Image (cartoon, rainbow, N blue to C red; front, top):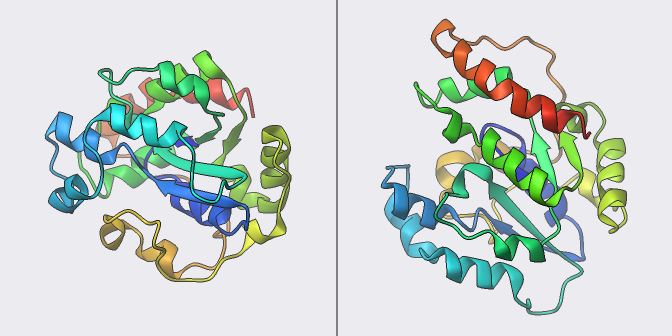
Length: 227
């Protein structure tokens, strides 16, 4: 599942993690991303210790066998973690799905935690790249929040795994599968027991970031046409 930041990607991981037939993995390319870019994120040292830094090692784990042979291996990926130095051939061994969100909402949310995001930070170009190369179902976060059962049913049907009503609710609290960065970012999800209600409030995008929304919009529109 390829998502940009400031989306409902962690709630989606909780949803799939509630399935009895599914194993989840949380942002497995994060350490590689931090190591290559040198970016200082909260918990950086812990993240670098917790995951392989070589993308080749990550790819081998993501495409290899898993203990217990689960029916579904749900991989929560941030599209901006897919750096240009990462080979793409291994992606052909995976089934891809895409979680999108309107850029105005993403930028407004991101601006509250990082003042000057870039298009690469938001991951829209990378998301479109993967979609163009491999295809796969696309779901919009707004549709998930408006109609979790209907949207997830359509997603599961498209993936050929069958919808499980257990995906609509989960126990609060942390998970052993959460990344070590969870204490910095996951407080809302850890308090949740299901998807939040859809909020129709228009996003408040700072004027200085409106060009960023305009740059991201064509990528979003391309993917939105596939929902």
